[in-house]
Length: 261
Image 1 (cartoon, helix red, strand yellow):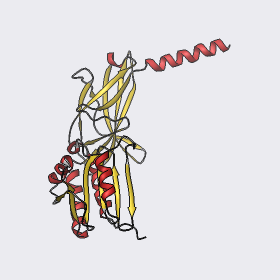
Image 2: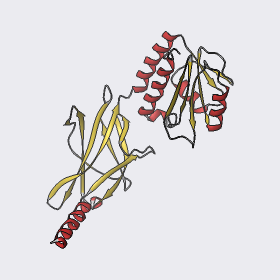
Image 3: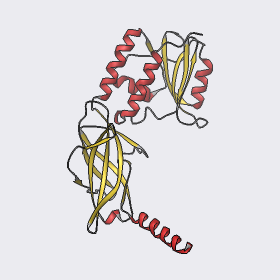
């Protein structure tokens, strides 16, 4: 009896492994994600996939759904998955007015039946997402009467700020307590800036530090703050709505007065 049960369980596992499966690895141009792809609506998206369980020999189709309140609503008709090159395909994402959660679901024609073959979750942003964020921050920045100072050797950071039309001054040292100081650099640069920062400094550093897991390390002080960001916020900024959102979230937080001692 135990042998029969073992054989049955083994056959079930083999059958599950044989089911056609499409796994989206990330965008074709380099960004990868194991959970949710953050993308812009109103354009075509090229993605890289991994096929298993015979999916490479099956007729594959995809369909987009909008997710809201536990309900998945189809957005368009099914479309055939056409690979070019072998493990990449393109599909159109509809325009959205605000951040919208969608799911791309795959089916595979296997013999006489069509069956589910995986899904990929997408967070879809408006094409003018960055413009909206810039406008909100500009209003808050003007209201706060703040200034931006940027460390001279911060190329990606300065490119992002200039593209957003932000006015900033370049300085080598941290001086004015009324200014928000931004910097980009390696772990050694970040350590040097932190050690040189006075108690009332407002310092936000985008850095890489092998000693720290990726994240945001924010320490409030009586009249300022020290923040290290080890996430790759500035890389591929124009194509990354999630990184844009995090960047402006951090700037808004920098404008918020630190708690009184």
